[in-house]
Length: 229
Image (cartoon, rainbow, N blue to C red):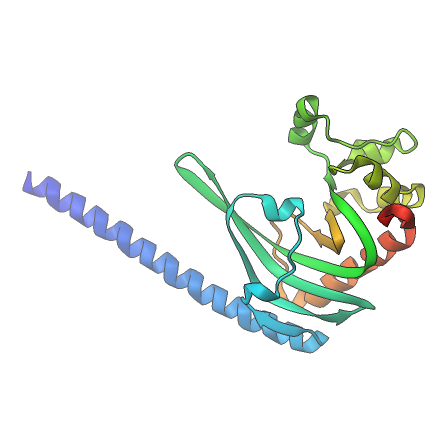
């Protein structure tokens, strides 16, 4: 009996020690990430706001409604490529029974003067197709079957979303590489771009901003400008 108790206590102590090591390692990695992101912000001329949640973009798109324990980190903002821009790491936790997982992605936000309906655009997957059988929330375009095949587009104000996604914009989005897996979301005056679960390395922040700013510029140049009416 004593041997059994000793084994239990050794196992418990091992679990606690492992948890402590994981915690210390994650804190060290988070600090390293923050320093690298601060240096990246300085190099590209953006203001680094750290984890100040009040400086984060606040919009009611699909990304910010997922999971729990939502957190903004490494927030930076300022002017970039002709936009008022922001960039940050955003994480949320999904709990399923006894297990949970945290999803983190680096998000670029571009603010301009066109009012956008709330919409969510991403590569269509298996669960989107299954969900649409019941929800019927996928907005398709008979004029652009390739777009409708590749993307899942949703939004409560479907007429405004349809106006926004003008033929020129549908054609532009069809031309984006299929493997890019962009999530594009809009609300108010803000357009968000990110890849779900993808955290961008600090040394790749400038290329990431260049690419997302280019997509944002083409998005606004091709969309239906009357959508804000």
